[in-house]
Length: 283
Image 1 (tube, rainbow, N blue to C red):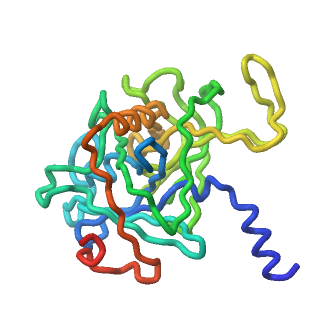
Image 2: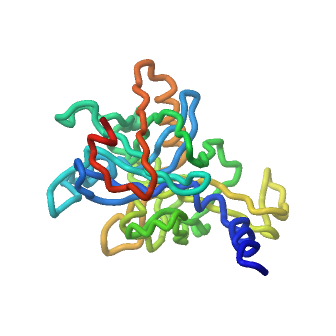
């Protein structure tokens, strides 16, 4: 097999979900504070950028203290990478409408607000790039404690275009709510950089699937979107929090019903000239 034929073969074997998530970096001006993960869902108003709220605030979700212990800084702009037809592109946008950090551009959960570690941002249509949406339709399968799941993200900033898959198991009853919020626990050895990761489950060809109380055999891979990962409950545990898909549906519904929501315009540069001045990029 020639080198070109091998390249084509390898491209055909890439799982679509490996490019469904986005590598992101949080910045204060031009100071890189942290990295993480995000993805897109669709709405009637356009693409919605989804990630953990703490990625955007730069503060611990429960204590409110800055996550950046070196500079004690919080981000005011974010940069993310998507694949183009020939190469990756970097996009960026400001996180606040004002210079005093009083008017964030993201939307929080319409009922629970900042108690939920998920936020959404309405983005203008992204050109010159390939982005795959996460489907928000209701899942027909009833997931149970002990079922296997995968966390798709970028641990430790590993970002060679494709997501890293970490595997774990549902650790708390998914039909109940962890701490009375729409979330559940998984047992998975996830690490920094995976905040905002997409959590999926899947059936492989040949697996037995139960649908409407009938048993079937999967003919092709069947992927189900389970939620968004937001980190371990503490540093000593591999138990991590997953926010349910209902949270994302609620966010999209809030965005679609909002009359005066600004649509964030993203600026982009090619990967080769990634190090740029913020004024040139944001303007």
